[in-house]
Image: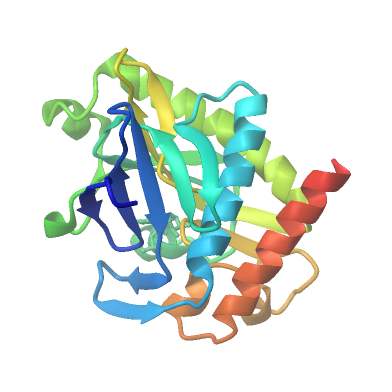
Length: 244
Ligand code: CDP
């Protein structure tokens, strides 16, 4: 990595340049943060788990026609990706009510939504990643109306593919966050990662609410057994892939 330059260090990843200007190297860290970095910690092995899991899921999505930034995984905690200009919007899709949806609407935790709900949040730590309306998003020129429609369509397709895949793993995909970027040709690609850091995943074999959580909520809520939950998700993803 001697000739690589650190371009950006985020809460969970470091991005390096490579000799090819169109290709970046992402290094996944074990560092964990929550509540806009007010809570900090380490989840041992998380970097490798999230990198491997994102690799598997990006490959599944690519095979189903979703364009992603993923190129390959040269090391356990490293992923090579196509350089994109990140759209500063976090796209959240929900199948079951949890987290900020419950807090802001009063819907009880676990309410099954009649249709998946797609929401846009402003990717802006200073402002605390606020929920955006479509008109605010357009006002801020974060995306064009066409891009916004495309973001929603792609997100719903991804949700359908991943909901079915996780169900095969005995896991309910409650909600998750996606980020997208524009490549050199202005094409929208799915970017960032998909992992227990960015999804709510509930074990279908458990009814106890605390026991069934297999994602970052274990860290957020100090529920313990964070590493083993992440590991279990990865094992099931890898098993399901070899069987499918
Ligand atoms: O997690 P929290 O209750 O703060 O927010 P949410 O809006 O309920 O989060 C919905 C989903 O997006 C969860 O799966 C979060 O893990 C994920 N998310 C994320 O990965 N990164 C963020 N900055 C915000 C949410």
